[in-house]
Length: 104
Image (tube, rainbow, N blue to C red; front, top):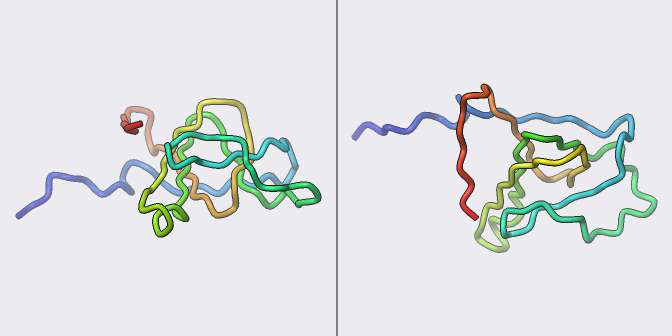
């Protein structure tokens, strides 16, 4: 049976923008409710230049929740630039016409 679904890779791609110039110190995580939240990790003394940057219009997902909570939180970021956990995957849309729905 032929699938009517297109590969997701045709619409989004993985990006890896790092905070190498330390443009921000706001650290965010993703909750299991698919929302960005301030990180609860103690980052005092942490080198944030290796953390990933996220900016408006980018998606992030936290694959660590899959094994632990049996969920895959994916969130669309809509605010100013912030840094995100190193283990989170950040993706962008390949073209502006794409529409993605994230059920909350």
